[in-house]
Length: 146
Length: 150
Image (cartoon, rainbow over all chains, first blue to last red; front, top):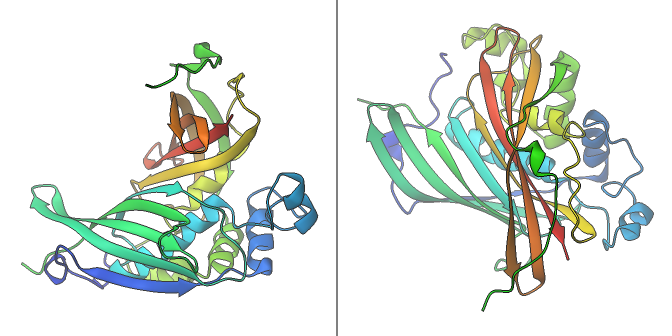
């Protein structure tokens, strides 16, 4: 496809840090997402009482919604067509209406006959940076200037 | 010294593909998805921008197909623990998903394994799903890891 490149392989170096992007998710966003997902409110993602019934302190952001937020940060940075692999581990429950810090660290760059590949480590944290909500990796395939 | 953990489940699910769908990717679905996650890349929000970029129509964000996994996977009848949570998710986009596409999903049980940490032993149940569009083109491979605690 022909989306103008936002980022080229040559623009990225091992060890580069991107972000953190700071995002928060409102109650209304979670309700909309759950409705689309076939899990209409009230449920543990949208309602305090339902959350407490399953042992949660408060309603949480669904895992696949938080994945969409990470994907958004990646494609905002590198372009809509670049994401080849996104692999996330959910380490903690993610609250609504709180700043979520999504950071990327470039862990490898490689060019071969199949393309120009960039690997990055991903973290999503809240107020305590060493207790991530999400850790993971992504592979992006970028265009080359050459 | 690791402790041997007893857990039983339906091993006959290995090697069996479970088909689900069709899932129609409407403009409303993409618009609601992008709005709910704050996505504003015009490739995903504006049909004209997407067409100018060479796509047939508005493009779905790469993780959208994970929406369609929910509730479509069989019960493995795991006899272990009581508390379940979503432990991880992997999406490998293979081809763009466009407004008007109709997807089907083929899922199989990939792995069931244990991990033991400070909070005890957990069983991980991993499902792998391949999504294809109406032309039979693979658009995404998705893995979902469900975790069950002691």
